[in-house]
Length: 219
Image (cartoon, helix red, strand yellow):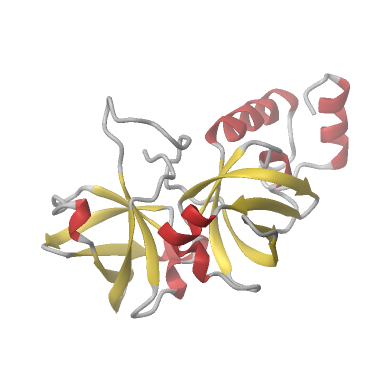
């Protein structure tokens, strides 16, 4: 479990193709300490397991399913990634509950400069809209952010200078694809409602089903 408060960034040292996926070798800055074998690290918001940890670097095996569902398959040598160690009981909790389980890869649609902050708008296929709550939380490349606006197929977040200086979100350009993890609380509620009210599929509830929820005061 993570909080979405990125501790530091590192760079990709090597990408080695394997039969079952790829092995990533990442720079792990000394501020994170030396990871233990089997420790968890969020890499761009994806929970990965440390393999062969050493001073200032570590390997991670990424299977095909993870490559398909995240943007880790786009990584190349030199790319910058966000890093966060898993939380411990009693740690200070400053973001929101982040599992490191990516829901979808979404695309940067627009970037607006407003002086003190930048507004990033992300485009998706619309199926995620019920899980993205205005003033709620999402994790973008593992960064805990507050949703400022939601439309069908698009949502926006505001990035302050501190976030831009400490994460790889400053590297984003229109058309780039990022990992999105929605709030676990929203996912849990929606899953239970689907179970109770019989949505036809998990990924694309039909209009009639949403109308039933609205009639019951749930949507």
